[in-house]
Length: 222
Image (tube, rainbow, N blue to C red; front, side, top):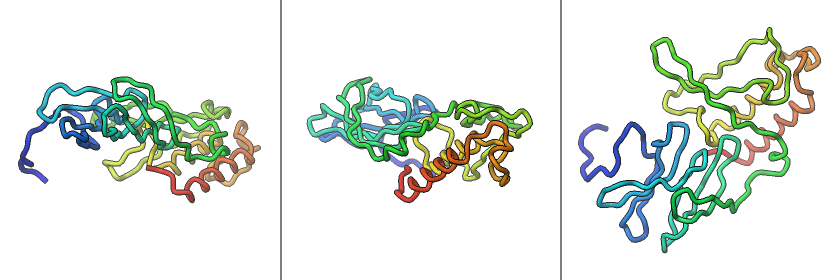
């Protein structure tokens, strides 16, 4: 990359723009960015001639928007940590409430209490701050075993991440982490749930696996 791309920069800051589209009349640019925080993608608009940008969305998660020809309505693809991407509509004004117009998940999948895991930050050995999602047995209705080790799931791609407040492209891992949290002493060990002293039932674990497989076959994930 490198070099001057030419043109005039309409935004600047310690954040990134992930999508940008011009308005129908070419007078404004609608874009999604991480300005509100690396864990979110919010929608903004800015005049093509430069000037103050306007934040349009506030719902936690990630949003991408296209504007209607009359610029009165936004059509958005929005997701949250425990809600896959769906289509929403909203008036084109700051902080307007989003109205969902699609439902892509099955009723069975929605019957499970999928978590919006909290984000935690810790310091690495080189001093860098690392953000992670936290899953605990208590969050999924299981008992904590004081002798059970914690599991650290690390993805080695570097730029790609899973520690955010929107639906992950690693949705299979997201669902599997519920299984790890619900059965911390038996996951991957082959032991029976009764030996875990607090693990959820075999039936519950099978339901999580079945939902994960069905969702994977249907190709959900962004």
